[in-house]
Length: 485
Image 1: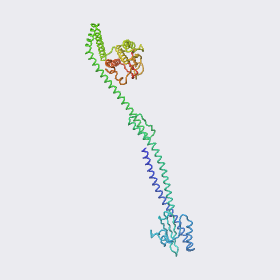
Image 2 (image 1 turned 90 degrees about the vertical axis):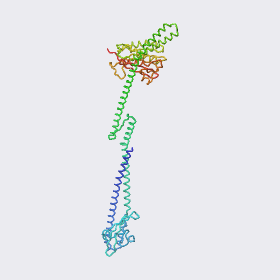
Image 3 (image 1 turned 180 degrees about the vertical axis):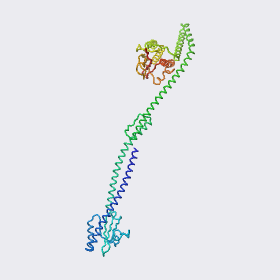
Image 4 (image 1 turned 60 degrees about the horizontal axis):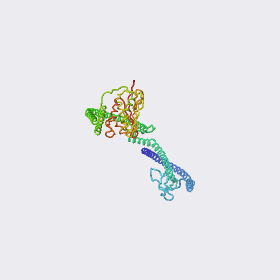
């Protein structure tokens, strides 16, 4: 709006300068024309009367000649005509109102002359004197006095008309310029400013809707194009940053797995033999003191804990094991049924019901033992997530991984392990496949079960995913490539 006001004021100033100059020139021209017409008319009247007086004075007499001048004065309403004597001082009865010329310009005494008196009571007057030469008489003249009041009124009227015309023109042009300035400059520039501020705040979704085919419209279209390019660049940068973060996380995860693998191999070799000795001694104590209840119970606890430590070491060895798995075409549904049969007793103690369903004919190229271990780990995780009981369901069906086309070549066998437990928040879901990460109390878990499962699924060329919300349970999805004959 400021630019529109400046343009309007500049236009108005230019109009005022032009019209003021034009009015001044016009008034000056009108004054010159008015004075010229007045001089000519007064001189014409004076000469006509002077000629008439000069003809009748010698023949008819002085009195008749002067009466002719008075009659002419009575007939004229705009000028005053009278007879004066040039030898009478100005201002005296019978003398001129203004002094006659004194030898200026070499004029003869019988030449007409004009004087302007601006000190009169009616804003000045134009005096025209036409000398009359009568033989044997004093030098007289016809005085024609034309008031300049009409000239003043005419000039005033001309100025008022010029002022009105200037005001109307300034108002119309100013209003038109202001309207066009606001429509063509003010509002578009305001939108451009708002767009620039929006871009500065990082909002690139706003677009300008200017249909002007001028420079401002072109600037708006270029700003829209710039927003699209910046938005595309931001999305590309965000995708690249996300990809880099994902790659870094995968590298970190691979590094952790490698470290855990080396650690597991060392622990297995170092603790395997001592644990076998402990288990053997515990079994000897059980056989030797079967009747001593206290000793028998303590030996039983020692044997159970040693076996638990042996199982943990076995998991570490499975996790750290390198080399190709022994994969053969096997049906997945029977493996799931066998897993459920092994876990029935543990599930019953926790009041958990185990269900298995799905397509019994689906086959995949797998290492049956490893897949059973993976399903076991997921099922144990679900059982432990339901301390007050519930239902754990294992389903086997054909499915596709997220984002892959649903053609036969990309079909996968999907193993779903769904529980009715407490669920997991987002920060826990992001770390559940990390080695030794666990939310269970001390002594209830090692944090290796899901890591081992993740490694087994990856080794089989599959994928594993989890969906979980606090209070709504969890569902693990294992995708294994389907066997093709």
